[in-house]
Length: 181
Length: 311
Image 1 (cartoon, chains in turn cyan, yellow):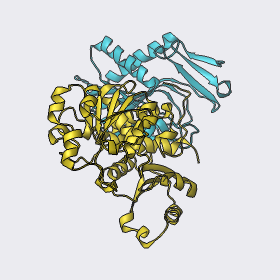
Image 2 (cartoon, chains in turn cyan, orange):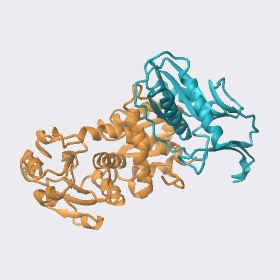
Image 3 (tube, chains in turn cyan, blue):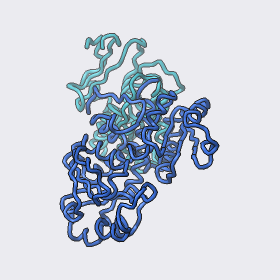
Image 4 (cartoon, chains in turn green, purple):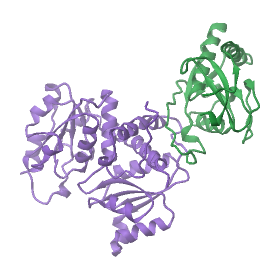
């Protein structure tokens, strides 16, 4: 794969996730009634890392859940391949919690919409905020991110590739051309 | 997970048409649907643009309710057709019935019929997805899938499991689908029952045959008792229900004597025939888990079939 540009180095990524840790905690008095929900696939690892930083900086255990939104997608029949359903596991009661949804890239906003619908089937959180590592623009729904790593205007024929050590060889974010695949 | 794998079936007519990878995929996906059933709101909108007709020419409570729940939990529109109070009674042919129903814009048909091959026949009459909910003594694929799902839930695997299927092997579509599926998944199978209820050709299916319940239970990890289907018996195949129970019914004492096997039954149970009531209620019986899992497995099948192959 040819990379057009490297947008975030490993160190940038680390600083961004540490910033998220502070930002997630900032609005709340103790005890912190928050929960983090990582979205399949890379959102999970971002969520877990941010939770680990919160533990490191503040000594607080923030519960982390995993969400797969396949069932709630509005495009699942328009894709050529049927998406494989992945794990959803929310191991805490979301009732009354301030939830932060975490994903790697914010694009059309449709996945976030699906995620909000999915969350509601687990109960009624006090609020939901959204956090993404990269906001690449091109929204198709009235959705914005409360916490953004970097904002990068892109062309529709470009793609953002987030690499995380848990799944990939390195920590980095790249901009690539779709034709390069 | 194999990223190359892609589910490709437009229908579920029988497990004979499904590969090991297909069965594995259905069971894996069913796990995620099982999780939905435990949510406070056990409902997803995935099939809300689909209309499904449940076409039942034969009586069924469990299977029909299970399919209907699976469909409603996924947001589909559901129409139920029971032959007992329908145009079939007025002499309409199956082909006319199905084509009339399809004209009302149906996407999927779940069919149960007393004649083997009806689901296959329907695929030639209409464009809709067809799911076999039992055709004569041929196949009952979703039952076998939910049985395998339940075995895997209990033991964590199917490969190498010793599965005993006890009862009326000859008339059972459940047993046919289970043998086909379990063999593909690498289980060992012994069928056990009165000689009159086991076809002479049973061994050709690649299973062991036993006429001795004690030996079979001593060997088994799973004891699946089949319902004695009085309505499907043209001749009397054993002297009396009591004698059947004496020889082939699973009893309390078997549980103590053979501490290994878990107990399954596709339902409905004839207590005191296939097994004693105590056995059905014991901790080693997963009969009610089978029922819960049935909904999840059927949701997975509906999801995969509806999206598997673009029409």
